[in-house]
Picture (cartoon, each protein chain N blue to C red):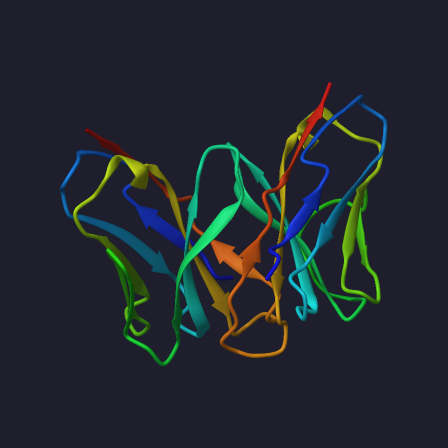
Amino acid sequence: KAGVTQTPRYLIKTRGQQVTLSCSPISGHRSVSWYQQTPGQGLQFLFEYFSETQRNKGNFPGRFSGRQFSNSRSEMNVSTLELGDSALYLCASTHGLRENTEAFFGQGTRLTVV
Amino acid sequence: KQEVTQIPAALSVPEGENLVLNCSFTDSAIYNLQWFRQDPGKGLTSLLLIQSSQREQTSGRLNASLDKSSGRSTLYIAASQPGDSATYLCAVWDRGSTLGRLYFGRGTQLTVWP
């Protein structure tokens, strides 16, 4: 079965701009989580969506937002980009219902803010 | 708040050695624990999922154990190969949170030289 698909793979944006990243989960999975990975901070949780509802949120400013569509695809948006937003953004797909669930990650979107 | 620690941060070994990577977590109330591999600039690949009721899980040359009471997991890699070179990440599903959030360690960067 198809894996988790993230688009685009690479992005270069200018400070002050906004960006939208997309994540398509594994078919049948209803939960999508987003993580930011930087060399200095490691993997940090952004938020999680399940059945179009944000179920969990990390400690990121309001410039970071997301949404999930009825087909479980998710997007995250970052407004007013800062240099510090440069990172690898990863999304994870899970069933979202069962206790003993396994997470599958996409290849990530590398965002560079200049 | 759940905190995950991985030791060592980096490991460099000759081909053929058997390796042990360590992971510890502060709150033993977890659903399960998952080990991942990450190649430079890429996404995370799931290696093993250990459910909270299990003590260990095996896949090929990999064996992972879980001791919830002591808050520890070990990833054992037998007969290491240069292709095993990557960063290995440990993550836990915490019962204190929803199912959508994984808590990650900072990883062990492994280099296996011929």
